[in-house]
Image (cartoon, rainbow over all chains, first blue to last red; front, side, top):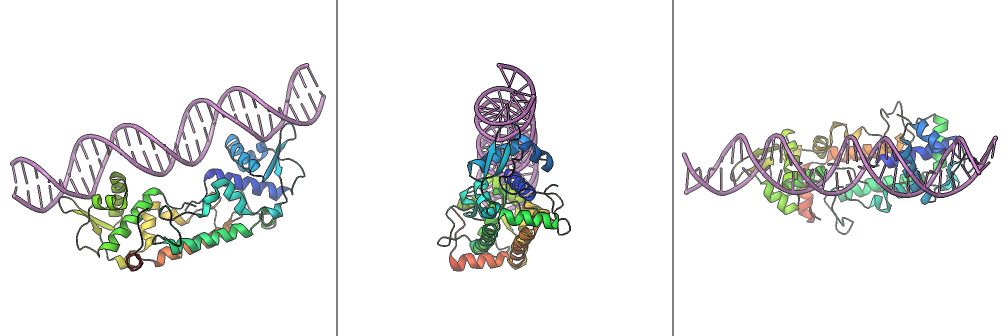
Length: 146
Length: 146
DNA sequence: CATATTTAAGACTATTTTATCTTTATATAT
DNA sequence: ATATATAAAGATAAAATAGTCTTAAATATG
């Protein structure tokens, strides 16, 4: 039951790495460090992070001591915003059976089940901020690597 | 938020088609009919249905008037069995961040959220039979096609 | 037996996802 | 200025998924 692409996994893990180390804007953190620490292909990670930069989640800075940093306070960035940038705005408009235009008015046979699930995931993502995750990671000493 | 492969979608929809038309074992229903009715590639569907035949969900019969039919009563086949055959036994043993060996003892930062979601999906699949779905489809006149 | 129908199996192609490699642009430090 | 460090961009390759096509095997019917 895979819901996120590898690219999104990497992007999310990278954000969680950043937010579990430092707050916003203090210093730039390099993609080299992140890819090494999280054991993610550097170039592949780079692309994903560019999406987040374009999506106003991150700011980037080139040159020595450059890198990326959160553009806004971690308290204001909810997981849903990140996921929508990485997976697309229509992330929650899916049918479990893959039928086009499946919705409350024109539901597929499992629509009622799937709507509830999607609703829960959406709610979780809407109410969880990067700051909350960073705090949780540090308090519980949670891992970001295999 | 896609959780099932196209192959699984097709397999599920085909089963729902069968079970919404006839009970078990009455007559064989041909893959040609299903692929046509559901607008699914015949050969691609065939492969998926073979998995279900090997998985003891279906029986098949070759030759004129041949086709496939449920091997057991639709009341006894739960969605979870179908999904595990199509997607693999480890369907519910996934980490949302893609980390190996993520579990209650060694959780990733979103494990608590994801566990709940997976639990709900699993429960839904465990408690929904093909018979229930067939009944629902007929009573509510639900669609299986785009 | 011959033919038509139907599933089974496997080879092949196309598309998407994932990953790597190379080059370019930009900033810093010396 | 020059060298170095870094993100950005793009080209290429590899792998997984999706889909098509061909052939074989089984079975019913006349």
